[in-house]
Image (cartoon, rainbow, N blue to C red; front, top):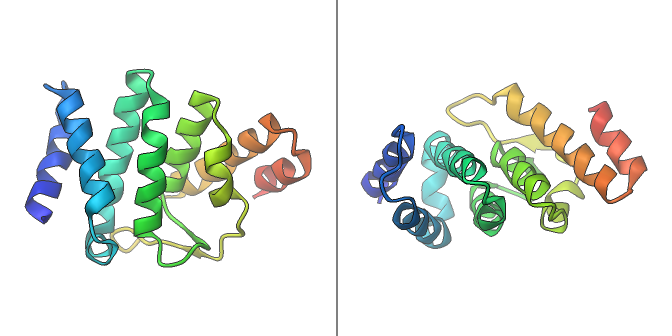
Length: 153
């Protein structure tokens, strides 16, 4: 499982993805069928795969396609619903670009009490992007009180 997982990660790292549709389908299938217990042993690689998927969809101007996949990825990677992962920022970015805010709300409406450490650390960029994008989503939904809370974080 981890060999196939790592192979997909490497393919996304290539400057030009040879067959994006096939790779997209493989990643979608992998994320929907993988065992959350197993991916928690390689959270940095799993999150990296999600970041690369996000970047590829943004480049292709197809953000809507990744929203449900990233929701599944977050659910598999989280130890509990109050745990922030770096994938949360990717989900919020895709929701903003797709102008489809509601799929992010279940992940924004909870107060985060824990941060998922990937490779023993957490990149502050993802933390800041989660709260910035979350504030933008709440602003778009005209929930200004919650937006202000996110901007203040």
